[in-house]
Image 1 (spheres, one colour):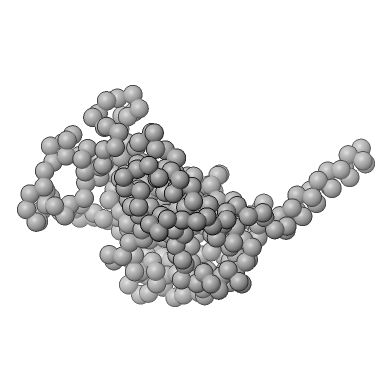
Image 2: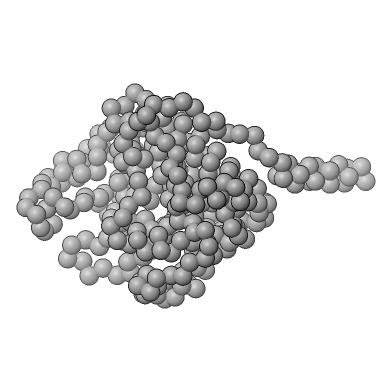
Length: 301
């Protein structure tokens, strides 16, 4: 019995020590064609590569979660897009294009994950940043207070059993709609995408067993036009060229920020029971100025 307890203690110590050891490289930068997808450079990447993200991720954790992982995802994406005509399209356009193509599921996963992970790291500041007043007013309108948003956001992410992302989104209300709260929280699992164009099969019927006219390779606008006879006409109004069609019952939206709940992001620095501490640390380092910019017309590609 004593021997058994000793062995269990040794196994536990071994698991803890394993987390403190450097991870072997997941990704070594290959030679690329000039037009291949490349790992984006973050605003503070040079500093973070040397010192880590202050008060959030160590140098080694940042290297694993961004430098190695994002590089690996981009490398795989280049392999998966080598034989398609639009291989050099940005990651958001790729994930929307292939979201419903079963034969390109791996391409969608890698494009979506590259996009999501990039948006996560772009949304982190190098030091705590105050929330712009107009953004704070919008948060107070949608969530009653910044404290309420923080508590709900962190609780939602902490409750996710498995990897994914939690998003703050801005809802684009349809023309003529009185609207409601503009901001909302949304969750996606694994490499899932928050964009309505990537969830066009989310209908009131099982689209896997019901033929509602969806064809492989359809874009959301093509499907909407064929299924509902929608045509563009004029420059203004519900049928103008500027209107964006989404799946029936879907919500047109913009993403403002997200947090990654993938274990490789936080496990190294925070341990098995440290997910909530990681989320609380992340909240203190949100780049609220970037969130404010994304409330306008700027988009992350």
